[in-house]
Image (cartoon, rainbow, N blue to C red; front, side, top):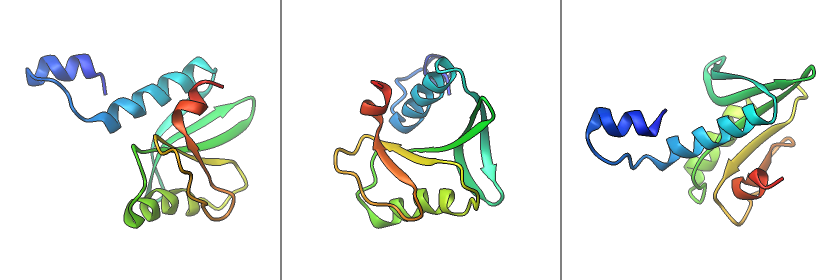
Length: 114
């Protein structure tokens, strides 16, 4: 989502911070040299499938995951992928929740600063 075009089209400020955060992650993945696919994996939503040098990494992006239903939704999308590629949830949370099956929950600001 281009927030500048959305502002012009809607003639108001765009307040969907989750879309803006996804844009930041997408642009950072591109800057790091990844080829990116967006869209569903089977019947689950996966924000980004990033590929570089023959390696794949799956990413989910959300503002925060304090509620169990949000946590289950974000983890469930990645957990449904039955391969051995890394899977990461990026959020603005400062307290990381442990996720099953090797799924990593990371603070997006720290990830951006790497």
